[in-house]
Amino acid sequence: MRILLIHAKDFWYKAKEKAVDDADELTTDITEKAFENVLVIFTSVEESDEGDVEGVVEKAVGEIISVYKNVGAKYILVYPYAHLSSSLAHPKVARVVLEKLAQKLSKEIGEGLVHKAPFGWYKEFRLHCYGHPLSELSKHISVAVEAKRRVIEKKYFILVPEGVLLKPEEYKFDDEFRVLVEKEVFKKEVEGGQGRVYHYLRKFGFEWEELSDRGHMRFEPHATTILEAVSMYSWHTANSLGIPVFRVKGTNMFGLHAEPVRQHAELFGERMYEVKMNGDKFILRFAACYQQFSILKDWVLSYKDLPLGMFEVADSYRYEQSGELVLGFRLRRFHMPDLHILTKDLEEAKSITLKVREKIVEEAKKVGREYLAIYNVTEDFLNTNFNYIVELVKNEGKPVLLVVYPAGIYYWVINVEYIIIDELNRPREIATWQIDVGNAKRFNIKYVDENGNEKYPVIIHTAILGSIERYIYMVFDTIAKNERRGTPPTLPLWLSPIQVRIIPVSQEQLDYAIKIAQALLSKGFRVDVDDRNEGLGKKIRDAGIEWIPYVVVIGVREVKTNTLNVRIRIEGTQRVMTLDEFISLLEKEMEGYPKIDMTMPMLISKRPTLSYIQQLRGA
Image 1 (cartoon, rainbow, N blue to C red):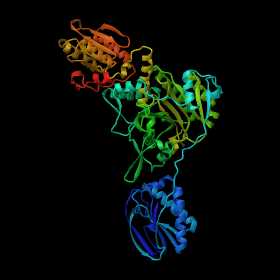
Image 2 (image 1 turned 135 degrees about the vertical axis):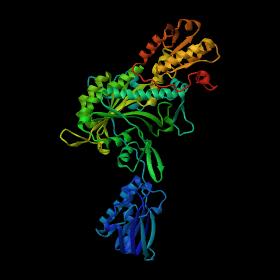
Image 3 (image 1 turned 90 degrees about the vertical axis):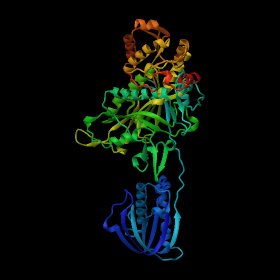
Image 4 (image 1 turned 90 degrees about the horizontal axis):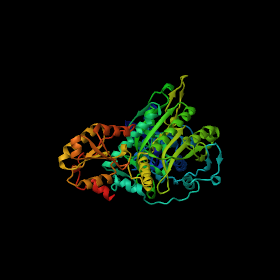
C-alpha cells in the first residue's frame, strides 16, 4: 500500500464519472464533501497487499494515527487514489481494503471523524495544504509475508478387508503393496530413470514441447489419435454410471479476486500457475472444478434433479517441480476428464461412490491392471463412517493404506487415490475420487429439498480413468510389463493409431487395396494403404514397427477370390477371410469403445519423405 498524507486546511471533492465497474454506489452524503483541518490519505492498494490484507491495514492504521495526532487534525479522509502505484490490486480487493482501513481508523479515533471518498470514481478536488513540515508525507506500507507450508499431522494405518486397523510396521506385505507403503509412510526414495514407457511414448509422438514452459507436451498425429480416443472414452465411462451427466466446456483462467476461487486456490499454494494482466491476477485451473461450479451455481436445482453429473475434459495446470517432471505422467499441463456428481446428502454420496469405485477398478482391469489404493480420510469421518470405509475396502478385496487427517483442514472428508506400480517399481497414481462437503457452500451451489428449503449438495469429484495422459501411461506401462513376459508390444485396437494396414503385393493390386481401405474407413476404422514402391517384406516389417494390429496383404489370389489375407499381430497368426468377416471381427473387438477419425492421409506415399515409419524405427 502506498499513501500520501496531506494535512489540509481545506479540502473539497466531487464525484464526476464512474472509472471502474466495481465502484462504490454513490449516495448524496458521499457524492460531494468539504472538510476543514483534515488529514487526507491518498491511498493506492497494491497487488502485494493481497497476501496479508489484515496485516497491511493494521500497519497502515498505526502510521496514519501517529501522523494524525502529531499534526492535530480534526478529521481523517481516506481518499482512493490509484496514481501512486503501477502495481495495483484488483478493484474488488482494493475496495475491501479501503473499507477495512476506514473502519479500523474509525474505531481508533471515534465515529464521525473518519470518512472515505467513493471508490472507483473520477473526482474533482480542491486542496489547501497547511505547508508545515509534517503536512506532506508519503509512506509505503508493506508486511513481510513468509511462505509457510502447512504442516499436517497425519496418521498411517493398514486397513484390511476384515475391518482391522494395523500399524504399517506390524503388517506383513507383499512386494507391490510394500513399495507403496515404504514410499508413502517411510518416505523411501524411489529410483528415477527412463524405462520402456518413455521410449514407447516418444515412438508414437508424445514429446516435450521445447518452445513452451517445461512440463508441457505436444502430440504428433499418432499421439493425437490416442489422446482423442481416450478423451472420448472418458466421456463414455462418465455416462455409464446410470445418472444424468451434462457435458460442458469452459475457460482455463479464473480471477483470484473471486473469493471462492481464492479460497480454493490457497490449498494448492505454490503449485498454482499465476497470470497477471491489466493489473489483475489470474490462476490457470488445476481441474474443471471452477468452471463447473460456476455453471452449477446458476442452475435452479430441485431434489428431483439429483443426483446429476457435470463433465469436461479440462486442460489443467499444476506447477510441478522441474526435477519431478515425467513424460506422460507428471506434467505441468495435462487433460483431466473431470466428473462432478451432485448428491442430496452424505448418505447418497456414499452410495454413489460405491458405483464410482467399481467403475474405476473395472476400467483398470480392461487394461490388464489391478490398483492399489490410498484412502485419505478425516478423523471425524473415520470415526462416524467406519463401516462404510470397511465396505469399500471389502470391495477392493485387498488391504489399503489408510491416511488419517485432522478434521476441517480440507473441503473433502474422504479422498481415494488408485495406484499402479510401474515397470521401474515406482508407485504411480492414476485414478481418484473424493467426497466434497465444502465447495457447494463456497461457490453458492444450492438445491431445493422436498420441503421447499434450500440446501447445499454434497459433491463427488472423480476422474474415473485418471488424467488422459496418465491413463495412456498406464496402457504403455502394461505393454512394457507384458513385453518382458514375451508378449509382442501391441496397443488395444481402439487405441491403435492405425488399426489396419492394407499392403498390395504390387501396383497391380493397388486399386483393390484402396477399395478395401475405403470400405473399412466408411465403417469408422482407421486404415491406411502402403502404396510405396518397396518390397513386401519391408512393408510388413514396417507395419510391425508401428505395432499395427491387423495387416492385410493383397495379392493376385486375394483379388481373384475376393478375400483378405489378414495377419493378426497379437496372435502371430494369418487368416483368410472375406471383407464382411473381417469387419465383424473388428466391430466385435471395438464394442464399447469410440471410433476416432484418422489424423494422417490414407496413402503412405502422401506423407513426408521422413516418414512415420522411419521416425518410429529410430524411436
